[in-house]
Length: 496
View (cartoon, rainbow, N blue to C red):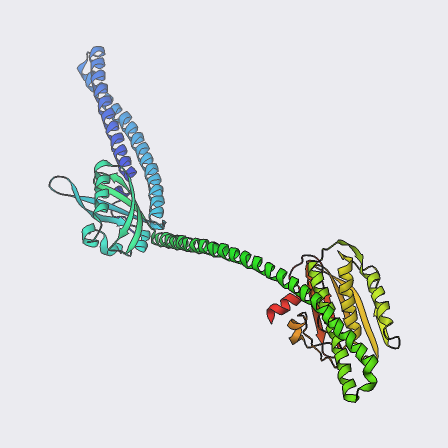
């Protein structure tokens, strides 16, 4: 790109030209002073020393030629020295100019030179584009060939008045200015540095900050949106806390009511079971006496009716005993100590083997199974679980029953496993409900209270109990003791 005005672009070049002219003027003055002094001094000296006019004339001619030779030689040396200095300075000037030209053309920021246009009062009213670099063309979209020589108001008719006022202040005061804004003509945001380069001229370095401004606006929008969301979430959090507080209060109220209802229900169950025992026992006793004293007088139908009465009485007595046991478990205190479940299981297994010595039952109870719990209550748990395993494996030629423990990440898990009748896992939710049976009474006897007792004992110990089974392939009952994470059985119930 050719420079329109090199002295405008490089003020130091103008300074160097003035320095060369000054040096030339100094040489001429010294030459004139030296020549005039030599002439006056030599004429006075010859006039005093030579009185012969002919000789004086010849000496003056020689003096003239000598003066010309000396001054010519000196002038030649001075001129050569001057030209050498000029050449050296021109070379430095060319290098400096090339450096500035490279910076001017290669810098990515926009760089433009302006000339001020004044009104009659000497105030700058408009500015003419003198020159700008390719960076200015790129960030503004203006072309040098179309814009240089034209005024700012012609090229940018909607230019902001604040920009023109800032330019006028730079031209008048010579102080640099730094400002930014939006150009309606160019549709971009710019950051501008303006500084004076000489009388009536100034330069502008501008940076396109549109992307930065848009990013800042986006950040501001996102920040505002985040603040609104935080306020919204805070309001929701406060409302949720209020609802949680209300629910906790309601839950505490329901808990208190439930505890009172359970206490009343347990007291009622205990009272009913205790009060029913005597009448049922009387019925059983009188039915037994009737059968013994008058049984031979009854026909076959009467004896059958009497036998059904006795059977129902025995079943009622068993139900009452189990209800009383269930009520006592909920009301009794717990005395926790270290228990040897292996030894306890061996004792219960030995008792079960005496029920039917003809049955082939293999009990597997490894030594060293220990736990923390109430001895009486834990004996009730093992009695019911091992007893159920013994009962429901009664149709196997060789029954296999195992008491064991597995170490899990949340603690020990105890289990009782058998190869008996098993059950359908879809009915597992009813397994521990009182009086709910998964098999018919004609297949296996029982009242459906044993597993409810087991569950109540385990939960009083802060644990849980669950089961895995397959029909005709056996069942495994697991239980834990102490406060533990959610067990597989709880996860299974939650998934149903």
